[in-house]
Amino acid sequence: MVTKFKLCKRYNNPGHAHELTFSCFRSQPFLLGDHARQWLVDAIQLARTKHSLHIWAYVVMTEHAHLLVWPARAEYSVSSLLATIKTSVTRRALHQVRKTALYFLAGMKDEQPNGKIHYRFWQRGGGYDRNAFEPQTIWNQID
Image 1 (cartoon, rainbow, N blue to C red):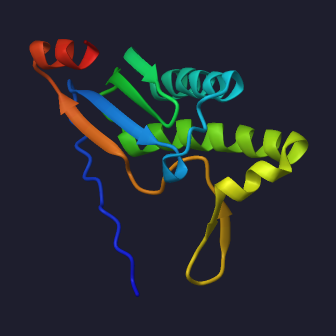
Image 2 (cartoon, rainbow, N blue to C red):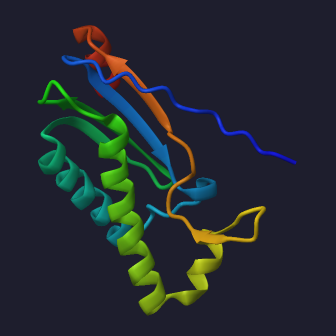
């Protein structure tokens, strides 16, 4: 059986803000603890610097996060900035789990049909991405 994943089409349009939502693997509450939330905030800061972003708003929930950004460069990639955030958090989480809480790896385990095993912090796929360019829409997203 072949599993199909919904592809997230991204529009990297200059002058547009982006409302991004990304979820923890299998909607688990991985962002419940202070350490994990701090890793995410640090990763957002890393992406802000690396990708020249303005962070307009964000909220961290226990099993997902919302982020509203405005790229300062005309050329940018939402996929790359999400990869920066997600990779940073995943690396820190796996380091911490392997060091102090091996039992936690079971909840991160993702066994592929081909037998390969990956450990995930974030749900596979692109998450949710919505371009925003009208001021009222942006204020509604912040609210």
